[in-house]
Amino acid sequence: MEQIGKRARLQGALSVLALAVAGLGNVQAKDVTDADILNDETITTQVVTYGLGTKGQRFSPLTQINTSTVKDLVPVWSFSFGGEKQRGQQAQPIVHDGKLFVTASYSRIFALDVKTGAKLWKYEHRLPDGIMPCCDVINRGAAIYGDLVIFGTLDAQLIALNKDTGKVVWKEKIEDYKAGYSFTAAPQIVKGMVITGNSGGEFGIVGRVDARDAKTGKLVWTRPVVEGHMGYKYDKDGKQVENGISGTTNATWPGDLWKTGGAAPWLSAYYDADVNLIFIGTGNPAPWNSWLRPGDNLYSSSTVAINPDTGKIVWHYQTTPHDGWDYDGVNEFVAFDYKDPKNGKTIKAGGKADRNGFFFVNDRTNGKLLNAFPFVKRIDWAKGIDLKTGRPIYDDAKRPGNPFTEGGGDGKKGEVVLNAPSFLGGKNQMPMAYSPKTGYFYVPANEWAMDIWNEPVSYKRGAAYLGAGFTIKPLNEDYIGALRAVDPVSGKIVWEVKNNAPLWGGVLTTGGNLVFYGTPEGYLKAVDATTGAEIWQFQTGSGIIAPPITWDDNGEQYVAVVSGWGGAVPLWGGDVAKRVNFLEQGGSVWVFKLHKS
Picture 1: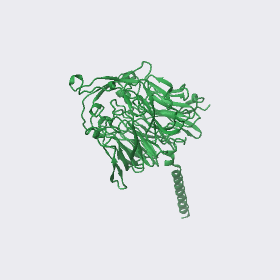
Picture 2: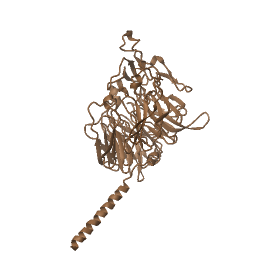
Picture 3: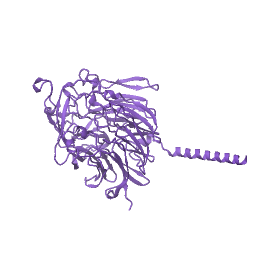
Picture 4: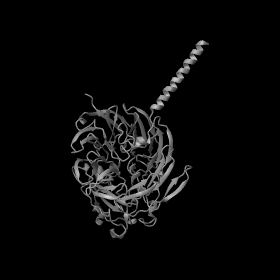
């Protein structure tokens, strides 16, 4: 009996110890808070937002890796996404509490040990037949909040997983993939809500921004970004309550075309707590054929500012009114402090390198245009931006011809025009960076043109809705891509580094006076942020079309980037695609730190 009693007491003690250890483990497993997210740009031990901060500057104050030490940067580990599912890899990883979370092509997500690269768990979404992503089966990243990691899928769903186990906690449908909707962007967390847009502008969908309770996935509000559509708020029981029409019906759209107006906000939203506004860019109006839809076609090809508390549009700025060239306005609007050269005052501003080839600086409190200038060397569609009206000065000869009045009147094809930049843009999805240290934006730009023409088209649910044809052409023999340091005040290109293939990955800049970026040829490169001089490079084995990140762990600075060629260029690139068809696909994430001598 005594032995049994001792055994029982021992087992009881072990049980208590196990519970204590489990409890300790629960204490150590850190959840992501609103403060973590709002301060991500200054907390160097984590990366918990898409953009290294909700403002999207992609600047890290870390200095251990700098212009003097970067020569000693070496790989720590690499992880392959495996299988036959390669294609384009565009994800920015998330780093938190000893884990690195990274999404991959075909709607996959991995949790890895940040020190070793060991796989902790993987979730692979089962995709249905018939998905319609326009520009490869990519994914740009995840959001993290509380104990959840949240990402979207190609069949337009949003999925929240327990960040420690990979188990599904909630799953919500964004829209019907059979109608052409998809989702590829990294969600963003704002005030406990997960903010998403949608994709599918080439299929006549309706662009919309959604806010959901990040812990439950339930809708809080929705805001369409095509004029004439009703926005909604949702009560605690999920009941839909009208929250005002976006714009004024038929003010800038004729007839019923606004009902299938496109304007998909298919990249990530950003947030500035200083002005309490969400900033998101909107895509092309549908169809591409602009002769079918006279007017500005709000809120397509624009930057839109939304109050996160009300779900209402506070201001908008349209970078390409009446877009006829597929110049989506989706590119990131990056908050920064702008020193007005006229009076020396500092203005809360935002910068945007648009697909249309112009760089725009707007007051981020009200959208007022402060500056606009070219960041590429050839722009045909417009002669400039009128700084007084904020509107383009169009070259009407560079709008694709009207198929209903040209070509012998047969209504089959309008006049072909050669136009620069191509519809893939002076800059596309690859995010730029801003350094408050140098005052420069670092823009991954491309120089190319296109033959483009218009054709008749009518809307059919789930079918391509373009009314246009095109062929992309390189403009120079020696380069297409160019990383450019841009001064937003003077409008000057301070320096550039040319690249043979088009640049399609994002940029990181640091307190160590470095700019990191990747090339389709497979190199991760580091250049001097002041001069553009190349200091370091590493071959990752496949093209880089994703943005690098950096963080600190126990006094050591790390850099990571995803490698895997693909995306829109090989699918839509015309003559350019032929020029880079030697590039190989892949799928991996690389992590680097300084070599210890």
